[in-house]
Amino acid sequence: MIDDLAVYEAGARRPRELKLEDAFEACGGSDDCFVWIGLDKPAPDELDAVRREFNLHELAVEDMEHGHQRPKAEVYGDSVFVVLKPAWYQDEREAVETGEVQVLIGEGYVITVRHDGTDLEQVRKELEQRGDLLRLGPAAVLYAVVDKIVDDYYPVIEALDADIGQVEADVFSPSRSNPAERIYKLKREVLELHDAVAPLDEPLAAIVQGAFSRIPEELRPFFQDVHGHVVKAFRALDGFRELLTSVLSANLTQVSVRQNEDTRKISAWAAIIAVPTLITGVYGMNFEHMPELGWTFGYPLAVAAMAATCLLLYRAFKRNGWL
Image 1 (spheres, rainbow, N blue to C red):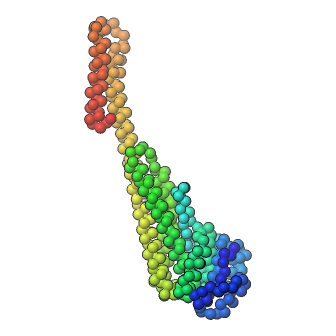
Image 2: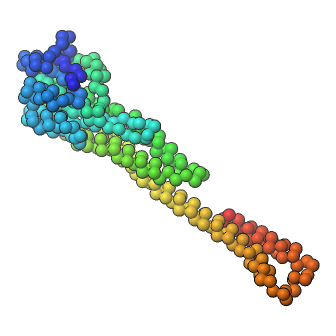
Image 3: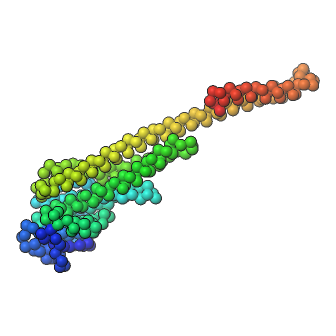
């Protein structure tokens, strides 16, 4: 459906309502005017109506209809098509969720398409307060949308950082928990966000370098600022991936150390128990000619010998760290 449809002229929004069939002629060829159409999961007939109204490139329309595109920036005819992946964090499930926002800018028009993505109404309202940017044309909308989506990556990064800190503390805590499953899950979520952020590096760098004629030179410093934020987010996520790999290795080492400790403790107790077992085994053979059987102090001496030997073994194992 159509979220919003408006004409922007001389850096301000026209107050009157606009119908889609009148959108192409709304600016009357003025260089200081453009139409912004916001679509939310558009149906094929809605996209077809927009295509016919603005004579859109068929490949751009196909991408807008099907979605599920990798973040990219491409030139279709005289228009620039950009795909973005907004992200948000479900803290209860420790899951990164991503949507898709597409922006198509051309001569006198900009079309934004949302597929389970960021609500662009706030972006529109904030941009309408920046007449200086709106005067730069449809590319200003592209900048505002990219800036919003990239800024929204940082709360997700902070949430991931907090959860990684928790799992790191769990690995080195005295408890005998094994957070390996949680570590793997966090690695998947970091990769999910990485796949949304990393592909933006190249197209934003190309915009800054002037590879797209549709982007005015006056906007390049703004895109350069966004590009800097993308690089910062990209480096943070790379750091998370390395840290989680190290934490996983440390966890496996901790598990191995604990298993060795358990094995040593079991072996030590088995050695201690073997002494009374041996002595009682000897006396349990029921031989008749055993001098100690008729001796008054035989029984207490045997018990004392077992206790003393067990105590000596216990102290020896304790001193060597086996118990």
